Each structure stands twice: as C-alpha cells, then as structure tokens.
Image 1 (cartoon, helix red, strand yellow):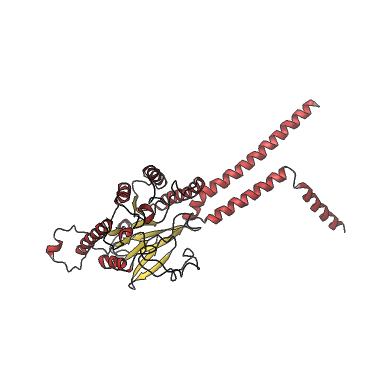
Image 2 (cartoon, helix red, strand yellow; image 1 turned 30 degrees about the vertical axis):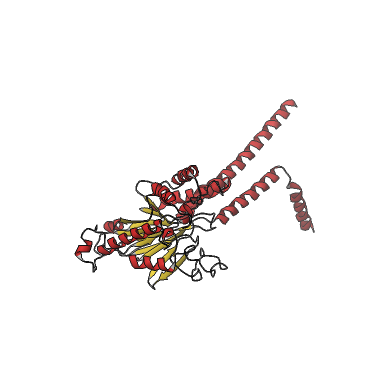
Length: 397
C-alpha cells in the first residue's frame, strides 16, 4: 500500500511538473512573440521605394548612388518628473526593439530624428539630462555604417520663452547641432533647422540661427548650376552638389489646421479643424516664407504634431509631417523610408506593430492560460459533464 501511495505521489508530481512546464512554455512563447518577433513580422513587410536613376549608370552604380534614409520623430523619452517607471519600461522597450529591428532588416545609410527626442529636456537638470542621454544612446545605438542625425525640438530645449544658451549648448554637445546645419551625402543636400529659434523677435539665439541659415542659403545658391551670383560673391564659398536641398525641422511650416490631412495615422476627425497657433503648433507665416525663399527646398520633413500630414507649399513643394515613433503618443506609430538621389526622391511609410494588437494577444493568451489552469484543477469538469449528459439524453430520444 505504502509503495502504491508513493508511486501515486510521484506520478502526481510528474503531472504537475509537466503541466507547469507547458504553462511556462506558453508564457515564454507569447513573450518572445510580442516583445521580439512581432517587430520582425511587421517591419519585414516594409521595403525601400524605387526611385528614378540616370540611365547610363550600371545597376551597381545605380544602387550605390541612391541614399537610403530613415526619418522618425517625437520619441519623447520620459524623464524623472513625469515619467512613471512602468511607462518608461514599456514605451522605451517598444522604441528600442522597433529601431534595432529596422536597422537590422532595412540597413539604412542614415537616420534622422526630427526633434523632441526627450520629453523633459526643457526642465531637466544635469543628472537627469545625463541619464536621459545614456538611455537614448542605448536605445538608438547603431553600427558605424549607419549615421544618426538629430534635429532639435521644443521638448529638448524648451519653447522659445524657455530656450536658453545653456540648453542649446548641452544639446549641441551630445548631438552636434544648434542653430542650423548643412550635410551632404551621396550628392544629396540636407538642411537641418532649429525651428524653435525662428521666433522672429530678434533674441540672441534667434538672430544667430537666422544668420546661420542665411549663410547656408548663400552657400547652396552659389552651388546651383544655374546661378546668377557673381564670381566675386561665390569665390570663397565651398562648392556643393548642385542639388535642391531637403529641409528637416521639428515645427511644420505654417498651415491653418490638419483639415486637409488624410490617412489612418492623421489627426482624429474631431481635432482636424482646430486652428493651429503660430509659433506654437506651427511656424509663423513669416518664418515659413523665409525658409521657402532662402532654400527653395524640393522636400520638407517635420514632426511635432504626432500625426501624419502631407501638404503642398506654393503649389509644388511637398511637406511631410512624420508621426510619433512612440506608443505613448499613438497606437500606430511609423517612420518614413526615403530613397533619394540628387535629382529625385521616393518615400514609403513603414508602420510599427499596433499597441492594441499586442495587448489583444496578451489578453487572449491570459484567457487561455486561465482556462488551462481551471481545467487542470478540474473546476471545468462539472459543466463539461453536464453538457455531455444533455447530448447523450438528446441522442437517446
């Protein structure tokens, strides 16, 4: 008898151990899918758009001459003031996995973040700033073959009334950007603008920013093939590729509202007709016209609104508002992929996994887990036997 009881106990322990192992496997599989594999499944469907290339080039020269650029915006890494630890953990893990997966699958040449990298850069003291920067560098680490360029946003240095030289220098020390910057890659000119400084009130930071942008404008104009500048004016100017620039900034150029914006990631219907406030939601009319006049860009990319939009300025210059990259700001974050040459460009929007879909998967897995546990504890047996009895009775009749 004792030996039989001992054998029964061992068998029960084995059954429990086997059941717990199955539950553990289910939990681990769901975690692996929702926290790792889902990003590969979704981003794998994205592709670099095709762009027109010069006919005389070979296929190898053609692919090498196309710049593959990624554009994302408004990551809003939470700080110590407003950031709850669970919110930080969840949303920062989502952005890190999305970014690292995109780098792995898409292999871009360069990545641009269009401002509001941090949520509390306008408030944070030295220690909090250092911690935010450390987390950013971990999340958005990248191989040597991929460049990462960052445009300044209002949450990084504050709105105009909060912006100081100290905050600008602090940002510049990490990201090598303050008032304006011109970079050229594969013959493509990019102008990075500190749109927060385009207040137009003559403040020290604003005056420096405008002076810097005017110098960059002069340099680009001197490099255009069809130029009216005298040789004397452009003799001491570095020659750049004769390519119309792409403008990168945080604030969008002036528009009344988002009423004309369309798409699944545009603003909510009830928000689209709300008028935008100049120098807060968008740049002022005056600042917008200055940028268009100075640079004559062929494309403008901006952030700030957290929603998608595409508008035409002067009837021919497209501006793309890039939605937020974070689940904290949208259920369906995304980024822009651009295939760019000195004369042409083509854009494609790559969506990230929906937060609601991931939550649904977790809920279904949790419900399945609960059913399995109840069945194992034989708490589901009475209803099951009752249903079975009814079926047998019906057959007998």
